[in-house]
Amino acid sequence: MGVQPPADALYLSWEELDKAVERLAAEIGALAATEQPEAILAVSRGGLVPGAMLAYRMGLRDLLVAVAEHYDASGRRPEASLLRMPPADSLRGRRVLIVDEVWESGRTLQQVIAAAEAAGATVRTAVLHYKPERSEVDRAPDHFADTATSWVIYPYKGGE
Image (cartoon, rainbow, N blue to C red; front, side, top):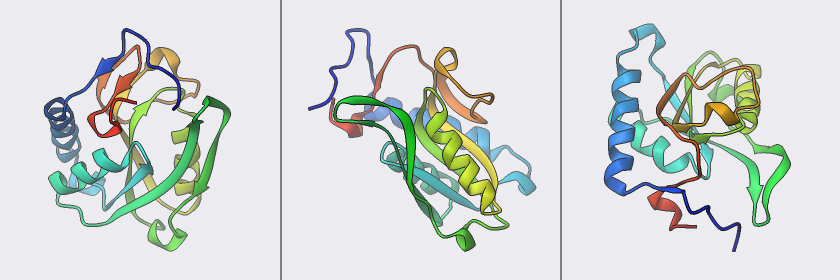
């Protein structure tokens, strides 16, 4: 089911994933106390595993979920869809770290960022992989573990 990854796809092991999350946690942990996240907003589905891993590493218990979709079984959709956000009162006045696995076009994360900011959150973003040459928005992630040029297959995706 779904689109076949290209031959040059990067397959990440669990150990490589753990090291990438550790790099992100160290970078974010070095921020000033007034910039430290109070909650993580993981973008479902790809951001759930790295979001939970970051929450553990950073000692954060408040793990929220946004449901967004830019790809379906047939491939990339023309527009990203934000299907669900946490209640505004769980975001208002808080420093929130939005986590996803990859920033490709940036359009999906841009919708989550806009919704979180509209709810009154101060937002930072973190992704495992950033694809700067593919980004279609006027910003970049605040934190990323690595850059990529091709597909990245994460161990929790079962090689899809």
